[in-house]
Length: 291
Image 1 (spheres, helix red, strand yellow):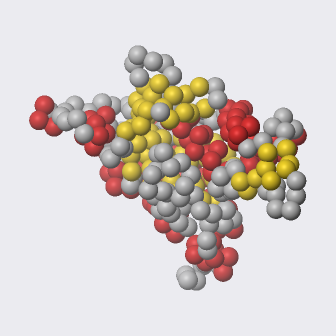
Image 2 (cartoon, rainbow, N blue to C red):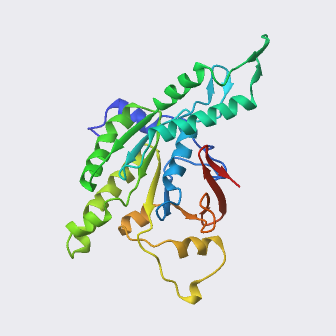
Image 3 (tube, helix red, strand yellow):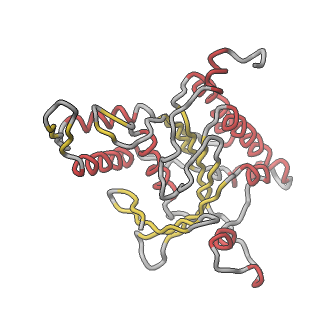
């Protein structure tokens, strides 16, 4: 323990946080684990923010509530909104749909020694459950890379005193790329200076406190491949669809990259590619559905 680390901070680093390994088995069949860094990459309107909200719902819903097993994680998360796209109304809609769907499928539950109990999906209990779930969500907004850096530094005090915080979400990590590039002039080192500092503090938070990081990144550039580099496997597809433009430190920091694309022939159908699999999904008012 360092001389500047308190006992509470030590426990926060070494203590057990809620299990989020099964947060979304369709996307993460091998489960999520602490220190995972996942980048959601894609062009505007391909479902990156919607996917974050979908995952957030499963994270903040409780595992059990008043005897019902909702299958959530009961975890807290930090959602950093740099694109100003976060909508609390959208998140509440997704939570309500997830809860009511569960209750309709399990509208009768038998407790040991008690008669069958019927739960009304339209009752005030749904509203109470949504409010309790939202208490696990912390939303922060940043207008510049400097503000993002300062915000990340300030997170440590919250993370070190709250063992329920398991995830940091950033939407998006590339929001200030053009501003930083202009401010840095012709020097690549100057352009990437703040981004490298952001990666350093994120790396420390993720590794010291065993957190999971989700970050969206917009597809500002398109990679040009030689004919010899082309292929049909999913790993090649990810490489073909991705072009790195942030700092090298960020590229090394990312453990897994998920590339999202919109189906050109269907406005509500999308695909998500990883190095080892591909999934198709649709986005509707009720949320994301995987095919």
